[in-house]
Length: 476
Image 1 (tube, rainbow, N blue to C red):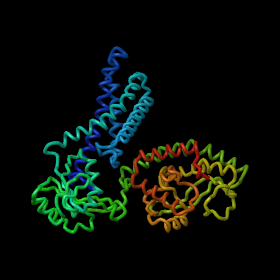
Image 2 (image 1 turned 45 degrees about the vertical axis):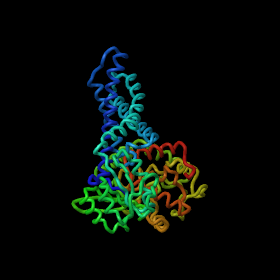
Image 3 (image 1 turned 90 degrees about the vertical axis):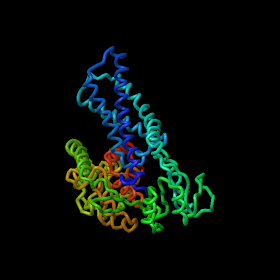
Image 4 (image 1 turned 120 degrees about the vertical axis):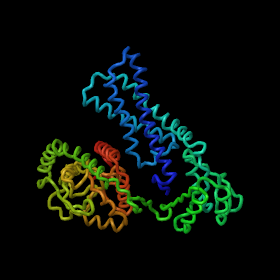
């Protein structure tokens, strides 16, 4: 794991490429807009329309591209100027869609009939091509120019040949960072190169070899348990004027990727990044939840309640709602509301429903198939017990059973439970039969809490909505 804190040279350079990419893409979209403004409009209208009105749209496009970059700042796809063509293409498509959404939303809400639709349509046909060119061709060349000459750093890898083979591709893929590999120091046979990388000397002579070569950077590859002379490495580097960097592949050593944070002179190491512990993110998610839940509770739920009540009156008279206790965030219990889909006097409420379950009345089966029985949970969202998107809440006794199967199962309670979630849109829904079912769902939920973003929430909601049209085979 390479630290990307500003204090580490490699991390600082990667962060610089991130910022360069953000400003280049957003600025390129903005500049293209105005080049097209002075090129297309005189040909189409024989004049240049109001500057102020058109400026609003250019600002929205700039903002849309910048927001897309910022919201993906945790993604490995954001940093590298070395990303593949297919990744560049997807990034450009995503940026164009967000910009188009913001522009059309503003045009609709402001009832703007002045702006040239032909201008906007033609611009958005050009924009993906411009962004792809910037993303895949211009930015790598800009980076190469930035890290050229004295900014290029001769780099030596130090470690066992096996470790060199594992890591060499990482450095070669990131040559735009200005790291020039000149060889490796390790205990392999003298003169044996690894993928064309020369062997510079044995590990026992690393100090002498570094003194002779004086590279700009020395990267130690051995795992943490073998790095007994960490301070000695630093002192050697300081004396020789060499940057010393350690790669601690903690995922290979520990099986997990820890999170390291510096705050007030203390270094904290944890194992689960939690974006939703940020107050701003919490407020954004809460606003997002209410923006969806309140209209549904006011306008969709009342007529749906009437329809369900009438169907129950015909097929299974009794209570409209089915209320059960569930585990919420941090293990707090709450009462979750659903439409009742089973006959009254059900003696085994904890038993999971199966396909063709005789306890379910006919319309109830349809409600479950279309997930309409979950709609009353928007009341739980308004009350703050649940979120629109999050891990699905289970019965307390089921949680205890699942925790015995998958050790990290309880981690999913770090966030509020949701009406839908990443596990559900991945197809992991319905009856839980095997330990593999538990693992797949829990791992999806943990991935969600570690990688939360509003765009991820929106993506899950859209995929859930599509599932209402084409229900999952696992829904019953």
